Length: 549
Image (cartoon, rainbow, N blue to C red; front, side):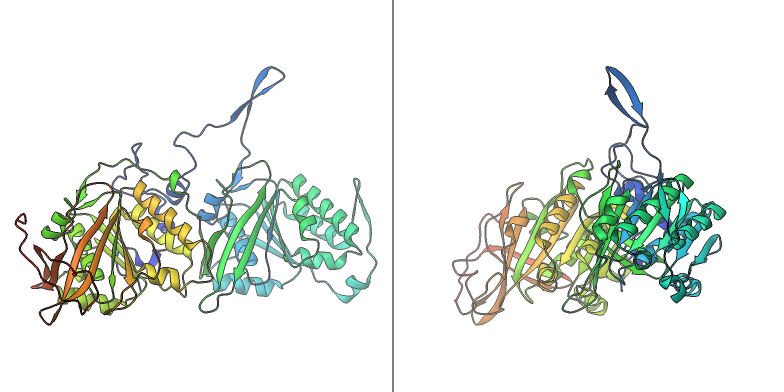
């Protein structure tokens, strides 16, 4: 369970942020964060032209952009760069269970709320089943006319009747759909599903002609229509060619944990959209889409500066602190104090009046709070005050896209200055089926750098005593690398810390003893002699470092 502000809408703050003030021209956020469309539609410039000027026969003509219709799913509208082109026919395809009906119902419920006449033509489910599905999400279908067309044995066995309609021939089922559309005169239409219509056709050619006829009548009506189809349909690609837009839904089963849902826009004729796959989840009352991140489209101006870690001696080792827009990786074996050191940095940020966020793949709420109290850190108060967001990210339930979206919400909605990801091992190793995880993490870190956020990544090394090694080399992701190790001295186990690199500034290069004591971190600024970073069992000697303060 998430701890921190807006825990109930951590995945998306859309409904509660529509009246919030957008960032100013410098990219800095005001007293209130931007709306979903404003904050996530990075590719759209601040001053979007109302049309496009093109040359035709030596003359200049202004081509107005085609109007868009909102889907009722704000983040899907972001992927669609404003919504679906109005008055056109679009296909929503996917295997059974991927969420086609849920998406279609949300589209119509949103239209009804805006006063649009809406029509749902169902050939696969009964009207009662559709209303039950809507009720399970808490949606009211008032304003949505549900028309049930039964595919009876008599209808299936009967030879298709042909009705004159221009140059097209319509079967009885298509003719009935057209009659319903003409009677209802809707602004939004859903036909569910094309697979049943395919059963009514004698062959592929007749099916294609009937779909073309249906498309013709839908366009003539001026309605924005969604045709739902199963991707197991052998005529899937023919259907894609006959419509203006195609949204494909997919569900991937994992070896363990929740299935992953994702979608992509295959085409959107004459309109721009964000290509690629985008994760989504279905919750009660919501279909939440997580647009894939393009870091270069999200930048803000910030003053380069060093942020204190809350530990004076550590700031000294780092040459002043942690630079804004930089990524610091804390590397060491389990139990050496990586997470505890990160907690000091989080609390230090909140005490300076900044918002901070921590996403933990390893620890529970109780474990973190107990350790914070032992370290003398007022984690509870900072969380309850809304200054600190701590969230348990369950890797068996969360998708990479959802995780990135959660981080973005803390940055864009709450202006988080410090973000901790604990740990990279769990993020990478517990989702082995996911592809391009490293690329997604690189894009996330680039985005956070563009936002001026201080990032702390925690990476646990294999082994505690004896030989210690990195499970995976992630040092290239970091600007600053802090190495923490156990060592043996005078028959006791101690802890050592050193700053291995810092790309954006100078730092101390010595190896120093440290410990957690008296409610804080104590770093002895005395250089340890050879062997402090060697495996336990190697005796270490030390001498005072004259230059230490």
